Length: 240
Image (cartoon, rainbow, N blue to C red; front, top):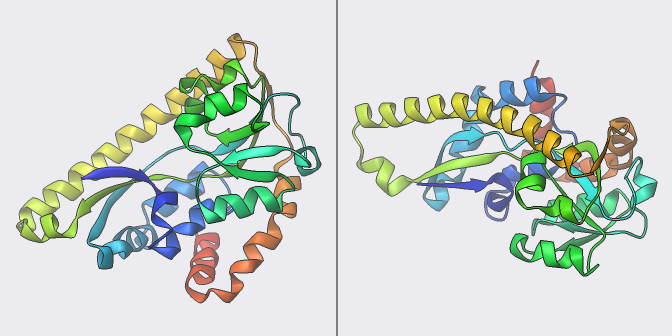
């Protein structure tokens, strides 16, 4: 068993790229409703042709921009800035569509890249921003919350198929219990992280998300020629 970011899966399970698309969820409540829905469970099972079975999602918050020299209050503020992204094609396209210059760099090298000015900023959730100590370099955190990419708990289908029906149910029940518990822990960690970075001198901004959503709409429309992904986008939007 292992836990990975859903963005890692998009390279071979294309439908997972929906999580790297901008503003796919209207709110945390919308996101959690999807995670717990039949549609969400169907997506969890989709990597089975690669011998993987998803057991549950784990909340990983929402990703927002943090920068060295100025806050990002609108997409125009990204113009000319090199922004570190995950090594995910969709994440790269997103930052570029918003007007920044996406620069994939490994997580372990990012602190030094920020210090040396290789990039002007990055994007991540509050706990990651705090635990990475990137707040020591980046003093502006703009909570535009452009994506909500969850983690996924995976098990090998080879192991899964060796389990009895009862054992499979035990594992699924335990996974869902851990999902509920982790969700509460994450919410607490987010509040604490924002308090800590404020104490360290970081200025936190709450820009108008609509400005970013409108700018990135063209990226969503690119997927209209990928029927499975486009249908999934529409179904997620229909969830109440």
